[in-house]
Length: 547
Ligand SMILES: Cc1cc2nc3c(=O)[nH]c(=O)nc-3n(C[C@H](O)[C@H](O)[C@H](O)COP(=O)(O)OP(=O)(O)OC[C@H]3O[C@@H](n4cnc5c(N)ncnc54)[C@H](O)[C@@H]3O)c2cc1C
Image (tube, rainbow, N blue to C red; front, side, top):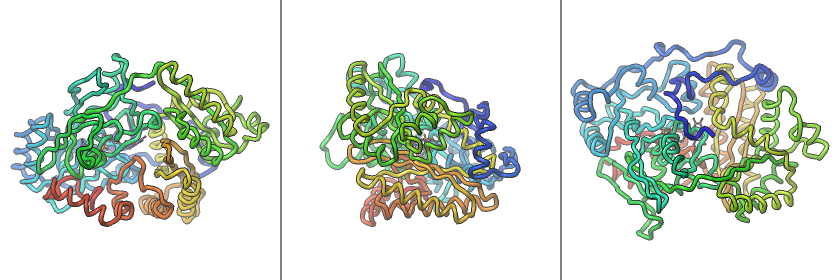
């Protein structure tokens, strides 16, 4: 497991460790060329020096005031830092960055160290009419980090990287307090020797900050067992321009509506989360990761429903639809997949065009064995074919490498994007069909073949999440228009199909116009009233969440 390692600074134009070797094999590239097509010539990102940024607008006096507050070294307005903080890691962000044309940049990057500096900074920015974009790990995929300034003259990125201390560990209560800029791997590194874990492993795990996770209501890959971040946050401290909101860690409270839950998911629009108290679990003693096949997607969905409703759900559950299964087998086995995931084996048993599920059980020895045994009985009753450990272990090995592949596909001129939703079990198959259909139709308008695939993950007793991935040849001269057309079609289908516009990516800029339809005008006005109280000058992350 890669939980403990913290990688080096991220590539400014894409994902992850700059030293990562290419992952796209020649046979996988051939598969892509045959299915969706690739560009005639590779399209690498421009050189850093060629990235065009607008001139910075902060006056010398404003810069001096910021430096006086946090220290000279912690206010940066050089080209590199402005580029790195110009966007997140969504598809449109990467398309623009790689072309050297981000949508603006912060005028400066400011790195406070503690609550006192945070408070001073927000008060100073309000006085100087400077918009503030909180910046954690920088992995937003919904435009949450776009350096929009709203009605203000200037905008800064408030980078929380220096606020990364562990503040306290309560072993009796299994809770930890941290500063919000702490990275997820850094926390796991401190917990591992103590036999503890947070259990929050989004695909972006290696780079996310805990404050960013809380601010976006993020869900890790093992959320079916550990819960998503909203279940882990027991207390927090938010610095808002109007004042601090401090909510101590309690296991539960009936003290009025859930203010903690209002601030989890506030995406920097209400203030900056400076500290968090989080629930922990004991690190698992045993892990079993297995692969199963179902004859079709509906049979797999039914089996997952029974697992969650009979309290036999695994920590990690991931059921690919037929298209995603075909694609993963083709990419994994371009040399010819053999054994129990080989076409011959599956075909002979009637699972040839079926769907692969990866299920991962983790926990204390006796408990996990008993739960897995109950799950296996339910899976057998649901028509599952066990295909052994190898597909599940292959997924485990590569679960953090998908984002690197995305960069390589972009270099090959292939558009690759993901979006997600959630709905009740009774509506899951319909939503899958409608959203998948909407994405396919929107892509086919461009006259090139596309791959649209999906998996179910994040199980609840009442429903689950659907996670779509789609690939098509990128329209080089209008890549953003092509993306927007598909995004709009998918979002309309999600809303019409009674899904949520986002299960875990958040609202940001890209989903902002769908928040009203999702929660209604009165619901949105109520949130806007909270914002007006905490951030009357609207300096906090303008243009995101509540527009
Ligand atoms: C390749 C890839 C895979 C991903 N996989 C997953 C996944 O499996 N599950 C999942 O849930 N998400 C996933 N994401 C999305 C993203 O990683 C999450 O939204 C994550 O929680 C963001 O954390 P961050 O620290 O990077 O926040 P950032 O991207 O820096 O910020 C996200 C938003 O929160 C605000 N913010 C950041 N810190 C604070 C703070 N301290 N106080 C207030 N506001 C703040 C920002 O202004 C921004 O609006 C993925 C993204 C990528 C690129």
